[in-house]
Image (cartoon, rainbow, N blue to C red):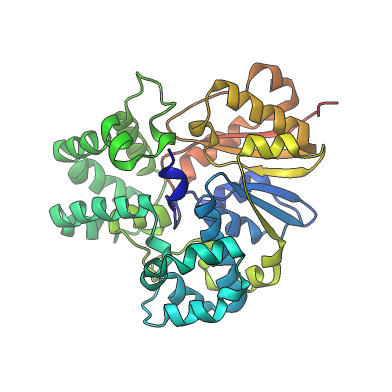
Length: 364
């Protein structure tokens, strides 16, 4: 766990910010609470120009990464930003860093000064999961390069599904998923506690992955999915698709509103317990259930209900740990199950289900 909390585990994009924007319907006067992760979702939500975003993460290195991205957005042009972060090639990243680093906090400055190799290589792919994706993509590209190219070349969902059903989803592919989906692999190789610590003992990770791929191929066009591109190719393909916050038309919006983000390094439950009532209008909470036990999960929902403004909206993603709203808080929340099901089908990051709700009452 200590290693996980002192390492950048997510650096690029593993959650589709478009889904959060649809779920939350952010307005200009909204105050938003967002789990940092790679920082991508925080930056995607900024496109909706809320009044403020508090970006929170228990792992300070994730926040250092977001701070670096924020500084680059503030100080650089769009083309310079893509080159600095690692989307485009560049031999000048260390020089660019030297020119912009004075804007970093002392803690982030110390971290990045001591991790110049990440800067030089481009920080976008430095995460532990991104390195894992790169290995997976190498295996796929080595074993079926022509088929992969065809899968990402078709122009319709029906063509994609046909290739998947008839050629891709074979015995070899399922053996591959069962191998990489073993719980011991996730515990001792990936070492992400969210993906083993609270996962039920009878939950089969590989079966879940197989089912989610087979569902996604019917509704998510892989060639237009940022996450699928990263998963199968190991990198973003700029001519294909980029995350919302990296798309050129959105960059001026980010620049104008970048100072609306405030970063806090602490646990979600701890932060909510310290907040005043009616602090937040929107909650983008990622997959927090995977990192909590039942008591902690209930405590966080208590914090949500206690800090929410009337009609506040909540978007929680769930990966391997599936939980319902604790019974004692259900009467405060109106679930939008129709939207949950719709986003579960359409979300381009493939593997999540959603819990989406609106506060219809607050704790006194």
